[in-house]
Length: 52
Image (cartoon, one colour):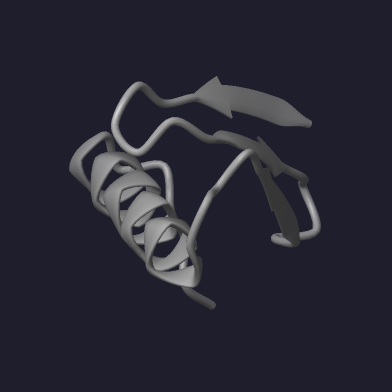
């Protein structure tokens, strides 16, 4: 899987080939939403997301 460390919010996301992910280190639930949204945007910008 992919280990993605963020500075803001300060979280670590583990992203697996199945599409599932684990987000650790968040202090608030909104930090999780923000982190996942940022990662999603980054993956789309790099054309690393495929929709079937």
